[in-house]
Length: 78
Image 1 (cartoon, helix red, strand yellow):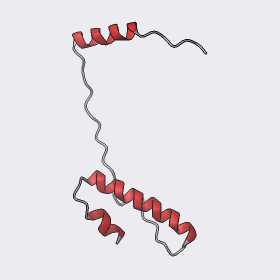
Image 2 (spheres, rainbow, N blue to C red):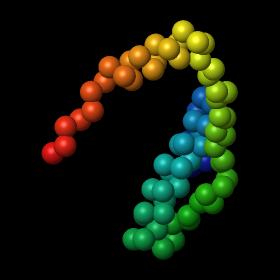
Image 3 (cartoon, helix red, strand yellow):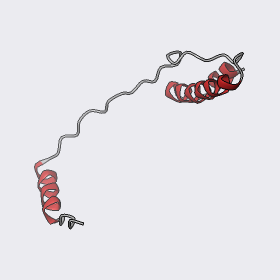
């Protein structure tokens, strides 16, 4: 029943992995009180974490960033 709930979602693979994680943690919690509860494998639905490419700033953007940083006043010591 739990796997049907996870697989029935039409979203992305990461969304299904998140759903699986929630169900897995809930089952682990319930297994403390009911030892007959099955605990799911943590690696059954892996998440894919793509790293976005770095953003290269133009000279104008870099200058604006440096100017903005110079105009920020430091916090006063408490």
